[in-house]
Amino acid sequence: MPANFDPLVTEVTELTTVADSAVALMDGFSQRLADAIAADNLSDNTNVAKFAADFDAQKTKLADAVARNTVAATETGGGTV
View 1 (tube, one colour):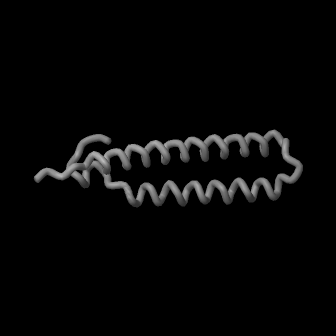
View 2: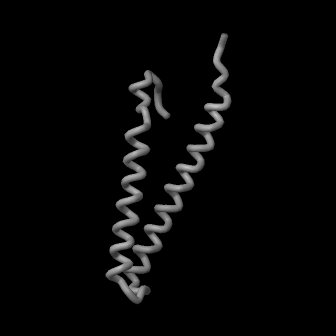
View 3: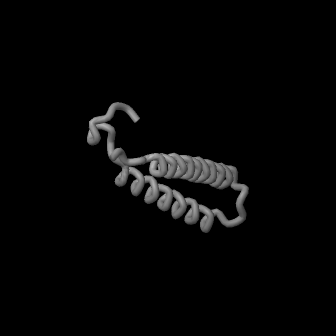
């Protein structure tokens, strides 16, 4: 009896959309924060710079977790993803 993977495909599609949205949000936020720091538009650059560094560290942590848990196409015998 063939397995029905439709629910799993739907979940993965939804997760991909969420992950892509999160990455876009984080990239946009990081850039705006960096621009504000560079333009000296913030009253307390020391705390803001620390916040920006912490934010980037968390973004990297998330990206690393995604990469660690993503099977490469060559490992599954597939082509390009």
